[in-house]
Length: 375
Image (cartoon, rainbow, N blue to C red; front, side, top):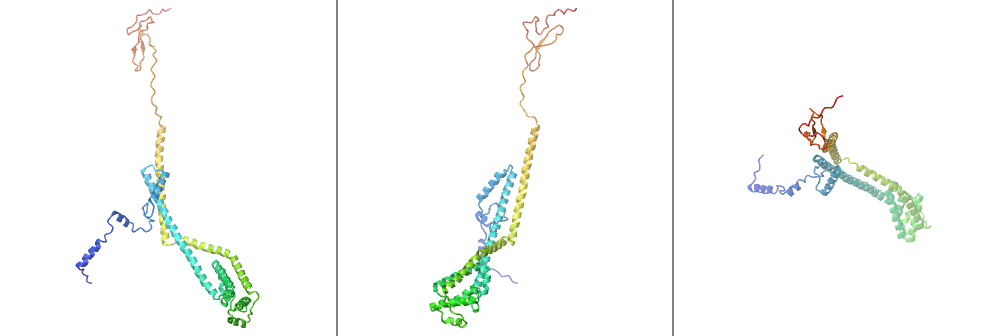
């Protein structure tokens, strides 16, 4: 396989195109391009995403610091990481709630659309004379509402025009659960007879009555308008009486559909569940570490307090009171008497002579006295 050689013009064009594909060059552009791969941020380590409010994170962090009272740098880091883990958990919960809301809304819309489609198909068949489909309509709240709307429409048609054409008579009989062509049914005979009486009074649809007359349907001119409206009023009363119970049943069915949609079994739901478990595990580990740091700090502080309590309290030494200036007398030695006083440094000093004494006190021995007489 031969390689295609590029011309110089092609090489120059490719080089020029490459210069325009170098990506952002400014710091702002690089910071914006760094978030191109950001999809949901559920596993991001950033405390604040571009779609979040930094002031709200600062407020939450200040509240965490106020509540936990970190005393060391390690405790401050743990509190900061716990705050980030809390924000990440809230982020996953918001994403899960938003996804659940979308699923529930889609499930509700699908439920309503399916019932509307079924009602439209069934109602169109009933309008064409399928009286057998009236019973399924009577089992549904929307079907009963549809029948009430059709009876009201028929009453307006009867009141406005003053007659009931064969098509409307057939629709009325089908809504009554009677086959329009079953002329042996008493209800069909009554409705056709009353309708023909109104048509005769209005000179309308006279030629179309021939086949009914041929089959023995007599024109019933006995108060046809009043009797037809009485039939309609009876049907409307019966339908309105069963409508509340059917609406409650329909609401319960819709609620069950929404509850089933709230449970997410998709791959995205499982990933969100794993993100939640990871962030909760991180939060528990950080909380355990913070408690351990506080306990260690308090234990150390308690040891310091206990060691200081065992030592005697230090009090400043009281000044030593000076000795009273009393004359200390020693026993005479070699018939000499010495008087001394004590000073603070316990150095004996000679005392001053006492004038009142008969003995001269000094540093030299006094005059010897006569020894006591012995008996």
